[in-house]
Length: 170
Image 1 (cartoon, one colour):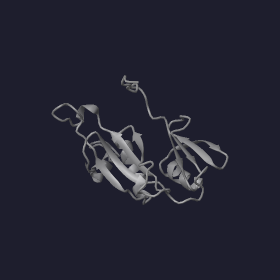
Image 2: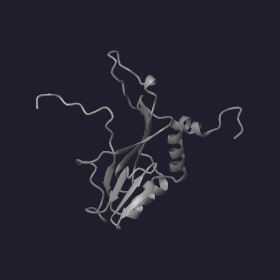
Image 3: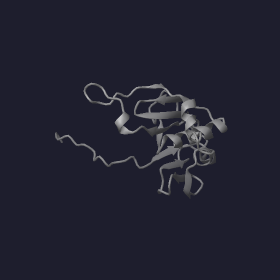
Image 4: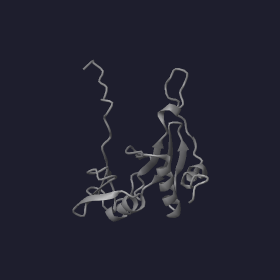
């Protein structure tokens, strides 16, 4: 086992499975607010949801957590689930939904390589909603490595993605 192993480049994180206290409340957030599609239920204890008909991107279950309080912030466990949107406009659309629903953000950041919105689901699981900027604009250090940072995201500029382009009818 002295040989270094590198995970194949096409490897992806397939899904996340979250423990929740109230399945219907969790579905209200992930399905009704964020827009994930309900794929199937496992009795009244679990739901499997996805984007685009995949078998599931997110599993929600109450197997060990029904009616339990959220995990303490200062403990080990999941920091957040990151949901990657295809375009900046798609991120603006979900921001608009959150604003209209008066759902609170916990942060909004420009990381140089991506732009991200942060919030908590009803069980206080962290959620990052983001889009990746084109690779050719990622900031680089002198040695060629990526120079990620955390700056405040201009939410008004992001919402500008929803306005029709100039000289075009709305």
